[in-house]
Length: 176
Image 1: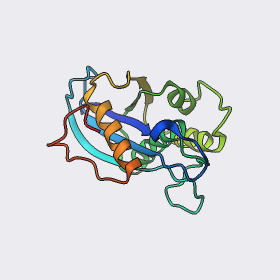
Image 2 (image 1 turned 90 degrees about the vertical axis):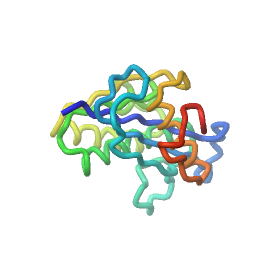
Image 3 (image 1 turned 60 degrees about the vertical axis):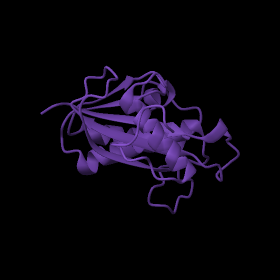
């Protein structure tokens, strides 16, 4: 079966981290059979997105205490890993992110100085995913026209704004 790639992105307008009321969004575009060239090969399996939850009572809460670009990027990885555990079977997966910060915290290469609870929960999801499959992360350069990375950005931006994403058949890279 072709490989599974989970493109993740986060969005926070002007990165205005003013506390738990700051609105930030995350997006995940799950693609099977993408070559990674940026041309948009492969088939979209599913798309998920939402707002970063800072309320511990929320079912989607992953440990963020503020909305920011960093917590949105981390939350996107967390929800991608949740998807993999619930719906992703046991296929190997590669998470493709434009955030070196979030990627290196999620895979354990870096230790958190902030967002410690959020990182702890994401690391736990990462390790749980690794029990059944190979999990890796790759860096994708942001805003360079990479179709699926741009799609994840679109999902995150629209979630932050509280708007529905453009349907894939009508969307073109670069449209937020």
